[in-house]
Image (cartoon, rainbow over all chains, first blue to last red; front, side):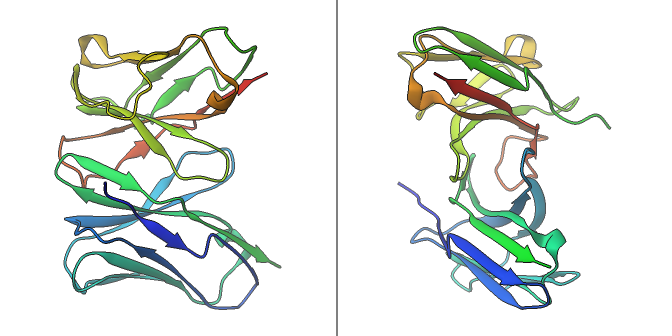
Length: 109
Length: 115
């Protein structure tokens, strides 16, 4: 059974701090996606990474796919209250996409 | 472009009652998903359709849950009889193609409370 483990489960930081969240698996994925979910809404795609070692930047967010395509990280620089939400990683392979349990981020003003 | 539409938005039922959720995916999207998201957890796939055929329903509790996607467009998810542990958000989602790695577009969810 494929599993994606995310850490930390919960993170509360002050505005302006940097943070990194992790997504790990023992399985190899064709691609890995990061979604953000705000309260009362469905998840929304932030990025898809496909190539091992790939790094993508989205404003203050930097995503990296591990060389072996088993893990990924999301780094946020100078976090803002608007970054608050549940960050989900999703591993894709074949017909299936599986989601991790998420990292719940709270950024205090 | 209209997003994934779901109804009802909220539902409260007593245990052993039945409930049905409806989903209209983004126009032209072949793949439709139903996920269950329990508070504090990530989405768990219940069933995945490609057009009107089932691709994966391995985690659907078939003794009480059923889903259909007639004509390959709209879908309904039914729970009968409901249990307390079914309290969750039921997310419908769609994507353009069959293969994973496509963007999955989610609806806002149907919030179910079983009392």
